[in-house]
Length: 494
Image (cartoon, rainbow, N blue to C red):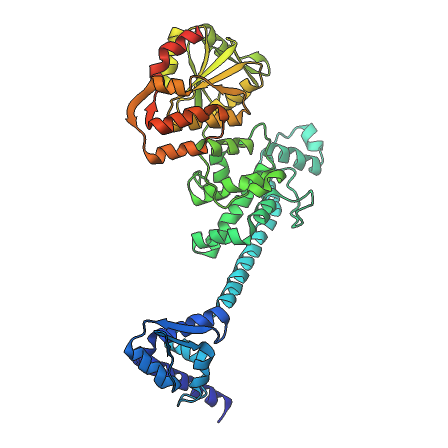
């Protein structure tokens, strides 16, 4: 018999053996257990136990082994004995692994082998992704040169005389393409790009999540390339000017909404941005869960200008200064004693914020803010309108640098206390709570009941100065609202 004939004969024997076990329901649980043992050990090893066996199972196995295998209400035997016993049947020569594969109709791979194969796939994908990033410097250079060739310059004598090297440098500066670092996989080198930092910090294991999310390797690699290109553009963009998110997305993905927050590409970029700062590599994530204002703050810190109109704050009698001194528009509104809505766009060149009154009152509620502006026209106030937006945070940061008292007052409910807690922690105690004590809670408690889910938010409060109020709300289980404190607040502000 030739080798090929022997192989075919063995395959036929295994198929017949599998058919025999399949035709006898008494072997069903046993064969499944043997499959799992091989998956675990990569061979026939370990002990098979079948609790509460049926009479059919007992007869099948005792007939197979030619000996009792029922012990204390269980069918129990060593897996390797099943393999040995197969040699005493008419299926002698059939390998147990081949029989199991014929029985289930698929390859039998141990968990260790499966894990090794998966890790190999992850590493292979990681290397391909790294390859996508290694071509970025040359790609950006080619892109810059193509745009330079299409530029129309004045044909003055002065320009005609400059060298080609000077010509390239001057245009690249205008295009923010200079300084594209050479890509180097050594993380300690000064020339390492942010894109390489990102991918290295992300690791092959986390990157594989992207491969699984996208379904196809091609789509996942394209997203890696787009994110890497965005990082390369950002690290070579003038920080004072920045680049709008939609413009960056159009440049990298061909879609102005390509990096919108909440989409997979948008979340991937948001998680990659810490790589622009070598000290923050450890904060690189696959898809971070950030509150809207935290995400906005990260964008701004990394040179991305998102929607700078939707984030705003409301100021009353607070002067804003740019490099030339007080901005006249805000000075005029303060002098007129009128509140002014200030967006991130308005704050782009601001360097200082100074209250006309010695203290600044930061108010959560818009109605309470409006009433206090009327009752206390000489005071200086900020309205955060609930959750504190980035515009409010920027103004508060400016104020924290000044020698002024900053008092925050919000509703005495879990959300209001948590907002106050975040501001106090963020300012390192520079901002203090105002009318947010247990006594204030007793004075402003409403009939609105708080759910257990909302009350659990109080478990995250860290500021010692808010613990008393948090405990009062937890015990009272009612929301407290600022409106009931308006009179006493106005009296203190006058």
